[in-house]
Length: 241
Image 1 (tube, rainbow, N blue to C red):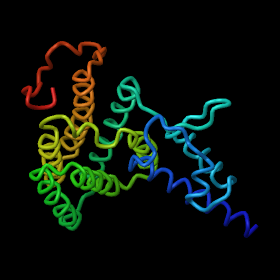
Image 2 (cartoon, helix red, strand yellow):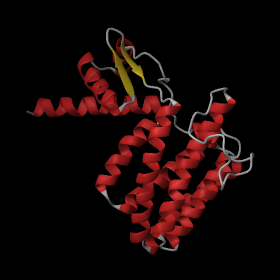
Image 3 (cartoon, rainbow, N blue to C red):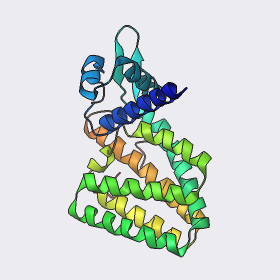
């Protein structure tokens, strides 16, 4: 029994390491997983590696192709169109519940995160901005204190890590994202659940808009229904859409 527990912990640690490698782009989208090289570099046997690969396949971070092996998954725009509305709904609910429960002490803890977010945005430091942005999303999720909601968000967040901070590469997106976060924070301070939910949903969907704008710049057609009709609240061209 003791040996089985140790083995389980090992493959989970390997899965965590591989997940971090994918997020850091040490394993690139579409890349073939070289099991021999990984067992050597990680100092493990094939058994825990293969168990870890099964975990990441189940999470959607890897795909298994018969007779070819495992590959790092790639999210298409169609995937994004399906995932982001779900994330918007779930994270919006998180913000709603957080605004219903937030204390003055919680707000005091959130303030430095938003201060750093603004600092990174003003410097145009996308990597540091992304890190602070992620901490804020996680903090709001923690304030919501709903484990069922958190489990769903965590699973989708792992998938979206395949695209990481790609949306922030769109011109003006970092500044807009920061403004959106400050508006959400203001709604939390006001204990406004409906406002926090609506602003969070909009924040997530603006990320999707930025991804579509980047895809169009790369020559990929935007095939969403109504994509070529101007939105009522569309931002100037210097923004997302």
